[in-house]
Amino acid sequence: MSSPLFVAIDTPALDQALALASAVTAHVGGVKLGLEFFAANGPAGVARVAAMGLPVFLDLKLHDIPNTVGKAVAALTPLKPAVLTVHAAGGRAMLAAAKAAAPAGCKVVAVTVLTSLDSTDLAEVGVSASPAEQVARLADLARSAGCDGIVCSGEEVAAAAVRWPEGYFVVPGIRPAGSDVGDQKRVLTPPEALARGASMLVVGRPITAASDPAEAARSIAASLDAAPALTATA
Ligand SMILES: O=C(O)c1cc(=O)[nH]c(=O)n1[C@@H]1O[C@H](COP(=O)(O)O)[C@@H](O)[C@H]1O
Figure (cartoon, rainbow, N blue to C red):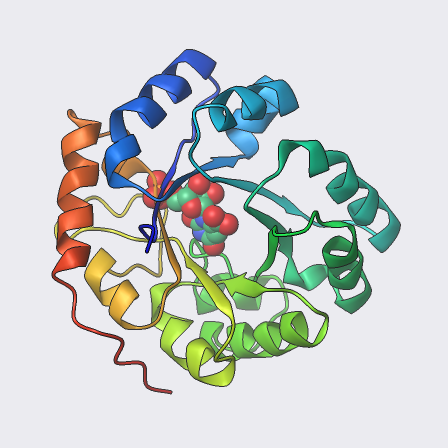
């Protein structure tokens, strides 16, 4: 089985992205390219990283009217992403349009509540539900709209995996014990998130900002090998 560990290569510098992907390739299951990389390098940059051979998670968090999102997803098809993100808050028709336009074999996953938000942040944008309640609501929406899974934090993934047994669960906000949390608010360690049912662990700065990214990735991968089997509870 390929590793659930994906490294988030958040940099505008193509050379740096290629060097990071090359350094960690033996220890990860794929690379995640997001807005920072895409804004600077566009589809051609994504193709350069993809040519290295690792699966690419293209994390553009699309959120617009259904027609626009469907056409944007169709335009990304030549890049053959393994996974694409859209925002669940875009609604049922937008989620269905994204899935309908996605290339065969590409998982469309819906971002529920960003891991940088807590209940105070949600209240500020008019959401009175807790992060756990909101993730459950948006997971049900994503599932019924035909998506393959969701993005949520490690705090919600066990309940989501119970609600949606065949779902694919992308979990960012991953921090090895003792590492800097940064702007993340809902975090879990790599083995804990895996044990709770994560399908993919997204790790950025704990690897990319390490003095030795290859060693950081190797160490996280080794911690996963020692992780206990799934113990998901609702
Ligand atoms: O969709 C994502 O990947 C994502 C969703 C989310 O709720 N939180 C989140 O941090 N991410 C992404 O996961 C990565 C986390 O990076 P680090 O905090 O450096 O590990 C970033 O590239 C974020 O864009």
